[in-house]
Structure formats: structure tokens, C-alpha cells
Length: 88
Image (cartoon, rainbow, N blue to C red; front, side, top):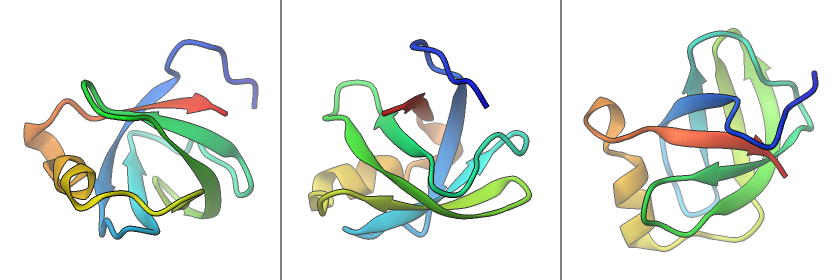
């Protein structure tokens, strides 16, 4: 899979914790072991690694724990702008 510099997908985050989350994408775009940067408008970027993939869902482990306010923003789901995904 070749990911460009521009966002290649948007995702919703579920089950967000300080250490990681589950990403839901429109189609199976992710592979185990891929390093990503997650961007959410107006918030710090988060880097990490895809740990598992099942159909349109993926487990994503953050490189460093994230703050509670960012966890809250990521949990907004369909009401929010969605997370932009880029290769790290």
C-alpha cells in the first residue's frame, strides 16, 4: 500500500484510551504494522502503529499517552470532523 503525503483516509475513533483506540475506516485500507499520524483539526498530531486489522476496523497504539482533552475530542464520532490518516 502506498500512502501519499496528503490524507488518504478519514476515520472515526472508538474505545479511546490514553494508550490507543480503535479506528473505523470506510473500507479496509490499513495493514498491521503501518505507522500513522492522526490529525484532528486544531489539536496536536498523534503518531502510532496499527496493531491489528479486522475488515474496516483497526487497533491503533499511540507512541505516547494522550491527554484527556484530546481523548474527548477524538470520541466525538460522527459529530466531529473525523481523523485524517497519513503515513508517519
